[in-house]
Image (tube, rainbow over all chains, first blue to last red; front, top):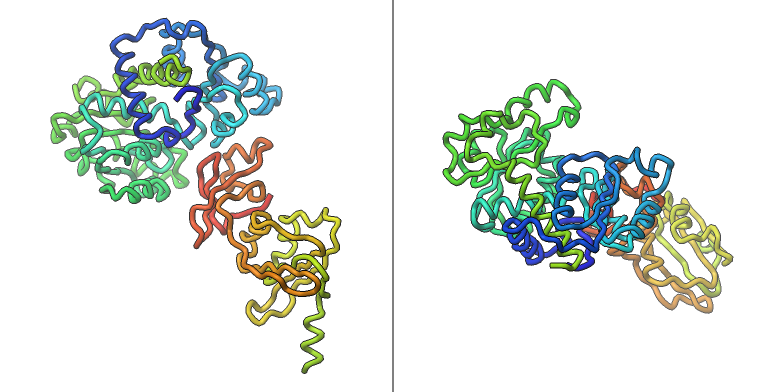
Length: 302
Length: 155
């Protein structure tokens, strides 16, 4: 994977994805290794993100690498009207690898074409977020011991949630059964369902969260945003129907883990946090190991 | 009767050498001219539109002297004129006739339907992959969204 950009999860084969997960396990055993001392990594965040940026910077720092970059477009030359192409070409001169988050879909693919160094997409609009996907795969494998023969329940905004789309695209490479829980307005788009159908995998759709909970080995929660609804009354109707409360986990499987890409607003009640089935904060920590693995792998030091 | 037929045939004069693009939908003639960049060509060009056609009702036709199209060049028009026929003329005779085909990759000519796509905000040539030939669905190489036939706008 040396020198290769990661824009969309499909850019890496199943084997390459698994290699990153294996490498992430090594970093979990030994997170501090001074292997990037000769490297500079640029983090260009054209829109703010706490978790993704900090976990990348933490990952690089623990490996001894240097970080340059900005955390919002207003503190970059973009505010002077510089094009994305010019920004990327310039930063290519200053770094060995660019991690980029941008509000426009396709920006990362474009950046990977013009850059002279590899690009890691840390989110391009509503399109892709492949590193979140890899850390989700890592979290699923770590908690279940495998990626095959699992029942995965996705809950919430399945229409616009880029994480759900990337996760589905990656999980179709494994023999999983999908359970999708959402209001009818926010069902998984047919363009994503196509990946499941192409592999002849089973999937089920629900509007009632309680119906799906007992089936899952993984319950993947996402946030439903008010602005996704054209009719505010529709939002009011569904907003409380997709909140996971601790007592709802009573009939869940013993091995189930609750995942969430975070930030959470209210879709997981605070009383779930102390349940050993809650895994979302460990999931966020796994993001550091996975990003260490990815950066080290692309820079060719592992 | 014979005279009328003759007059019809001569509505757009014959050319000695070059290409004829026939069976263009009448409302797409100017689009085809644009896609092929004929506006700035030095060749002699004759065209007609809203001509009677037994097959299509109304049709357009373009004749370009001393111009021979490569398949990837002519296939660009398939998005607006899927039924078009390319006829190669040498010494006033038809030497080749073929249907245009929608290419697997569509470069530069179509705008991405997704308003949040980077190609609509930076100076980037668009690039699509054809995902379905039967109903024409274009998959944007950049934002990965689909632009369907009804939403196609030309750059």
